[in-house]
Length: 142
Image 1 (cartoon, rainbow, N blue to C red):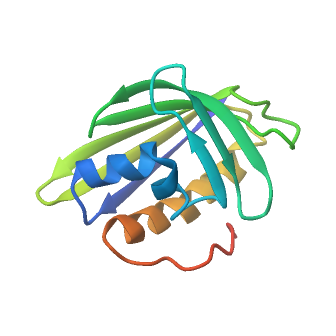
Image 2: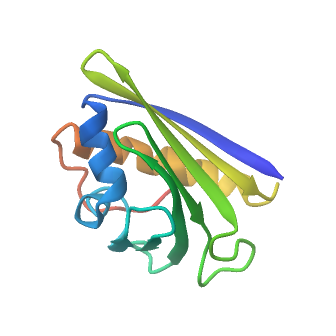
């Protein structure tokens, strides 16, 4: 199995970034057209992307302002069934900024490049909105 690791520096404190990872109304501002997030261990993680593709999983671990872990998979795309991979997001304070380190584990060698491209598209959008900007309509990755 493969894993994808992507880092993003964000001009906002970890508490602000954490909100964008755990509350649906904030998540939708940077990724997805719709989201259902029940941010507690065992709670649902579900999102509909701008292109209509849907993900589903559940929250595994939440440490306020520090770490978010959830399972991930596609409802309508073969290769990664709902909840079959794990996304770990660590937030590290760097002065007034946050270093976000995302590790997506359990991907096949075939799926890893697509997810690498996707996270590299979406994390800058998260950085923009968490810093108070507007990333605009999502054109989707690459």
